[in-house]
Length: 221
Image (cartoon, rainbow, N blue to C red):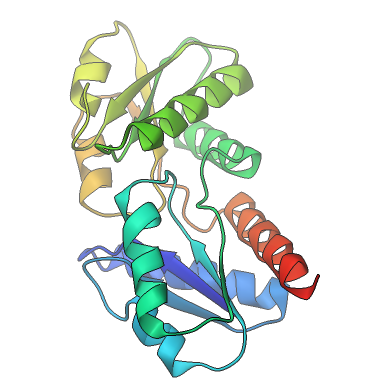
């Protein structure tokens, strides 16, 4: 089975998006998919793992490998006492997600000539920020335009600062998975165009399936 781990948000739209993603993955993978949260909401990973039987693949639905991915989720797995669990990499700047981000940006009204800001959640972990920079470089290559970076929290520049630093029409690409406080901050950053979060885009579904199949193969080997 798959345990899909999201951050958690008090905005009810966030859990709805994660539930939709889990449902689409389950339909494609043909195995049960349970949702857990690393923070804010319940159930956590420990509770979910204790409630199910059989091998499990835990997939962190995080766009960067910050504290929750490197510390919280492994600790919650350890607390479950389960040994038949494989923890995959977080989502990161995978090609499927760059395609999804570009699609969301175009759907929001991006047009050639717009200045582009990739807006991410932010982190105090330099490794997570490096992954954001990788995503920005990949989006820049996909659009063939320069891409600046802004953050919704923790890191600088903020999304508002990044938008204000460029002239003309500005489009913000949301490097977020689900709606919530951070997406609201992007929408208030003063850009002309703000893309929706990646959500349950087919590319996100494809990435979860790829993570699961790679883990299942390693467990069977």
